[in-house]
Length: 192
Image (cartoon, rainbow, N blue to C red; front, top):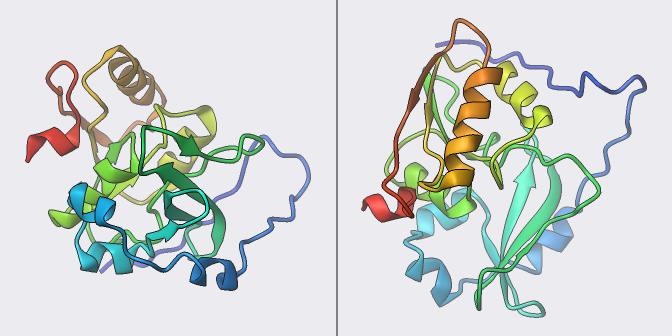
């Protein structure tokens, strides 16, 4: 097994930022199951492992976004009615799912959405979500992860193809990168 020793920090920051974490008590208020979770193919094991919940007030599925140590940075939400996402706009988006990864494996799958990453995890793969098509901040975080082989599974549309191209340009040399070319208009969840 490989020893995990990762120190992820923002290289663009000249001063140490004090990270504020979400109190675990806030997560407790969302620990409900909702039929939409199962409609999207989630299993109880995945729901528990990723601590996915339901916010009755906003009628949204909740996704705790954790850092590599397991501390919750913020809670992202996705409406169960329509395609509305609630994410903080003032901070760099981290990578969804880094805490839950199996660091004894040599590979990782990168996709755009929570549900894509969770589908891959359900199938037994290491997967993270960019919560979009990626940013310079996220490229830096990816390059610090200890995985040698990277599989890009971005959506089959112009944004996904452009995102995959940019990722390829920013991934460190020495890593092996494969890209799954999704059919037009499709994503990982359509591959079932």
